Image (cartoon, rainbow, N blue to C red; front, side):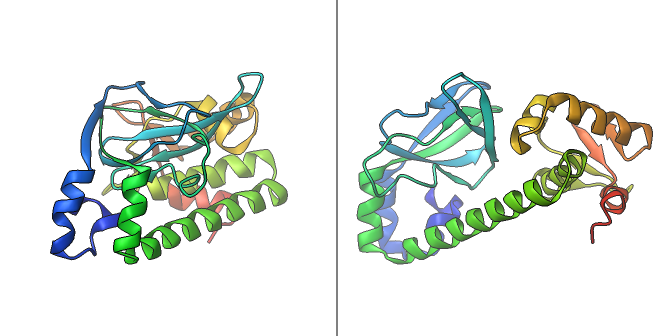
Length: 224
């Protein structure tokens, strides 16, 4: 099981027994809660199959989508080295199978095999760079442009390129979820999506996911 996970791919064979003892499998049905924001952070999760929606809620119960974690990903990414609660909520977005490890076992592995810390550092660098890019988009682009930039980013991370030049999303996103990802109103997303449909840039697949002509989408943004 652990050989399927990028975080542990570089470990020597001598680590196999410890990893086998430290990891367990856990399955979640669609919309099943994996953990809730604020609960004691006791375990880390690694996705073997499926997808997980990570989101935060404020005091009024308003939802802010943080990310959709995919196969091979580890979550949560923060709070591991301080006594705190889970920084967000996590719910299975589809039939999902995970490998689970306690935080204490993960810390012991890092002590024994420091190479894991390099893997973790590299992953965190990518997250920070992504957050910086999102912040720049929030400041420098209007609401419609932020929707288009989000679609470009999701096509890259959640899309499969087809022979007709379109990219088909592997995840079904609601307009409300898209709006939450970029902090805009759902009505703004509705208008942007409707405009892209009318111009033939965006279509719906047979399963209800987006199919997007990313070349035309980038032209709309003068994005290179």
